[in-house]
Length: 215
Image 1: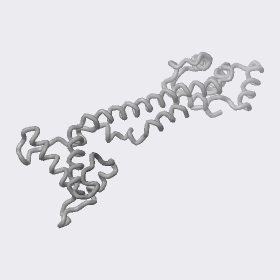
Image 2 (image 1 turned 60 degrees about the vertical axis):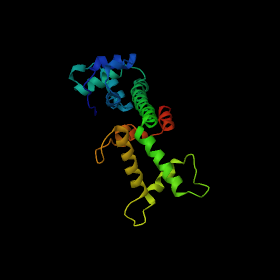
Image 3 (image 1 turned 135 degrees about the horizontal axis):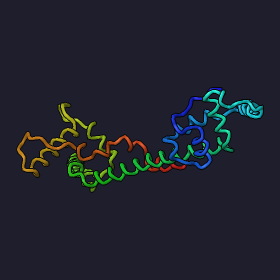
Image 4 (image 1 turned 90 degrees about the vertical axis):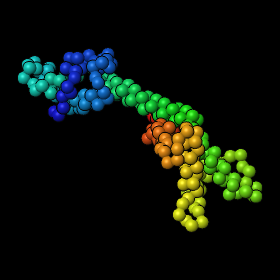
């Protein structure tokens, strides 16, 4: 009989915890899984029942066998433990989903309140209108965010710099002017204003996080 004895709870308490679904008796779903591995197969159950019925002393059994014997006192132990495990799993899924929802909400607020991002978008729009002057696109009131990728693709006549770099230089210059700083002084990084926008949790969409709760 193979059974890796869990650290907690002890035999009698384990059977009682299964019957009452006492969550305080276990620390995690892993503890429940370890206990499930100790549940006897039909052959093992029959062997232990026959041993007890023979009147032989239980004390001579191994610790693992006595532990398994105690678990047999809990009816439908496997079903109960699976339900027990789901309580831990759902709590973990809820915590993960809540963290995703929280980071999305914080990221949205950071985007709305970011001075640097607002200025960068304004400069990018002005640059686009300047380059498109005289065409139907030369007086745009806005642009799609996916168009920002074109900033890195548009290069100067000598090919030494991109429009993105030009926009960045202009943004830095305006930030220094607004803050009363001299030319060449350091300015804050955009990423510092948007810590949650670059959070790994944003790789999961709100829909994916919600669907995870239903699995």
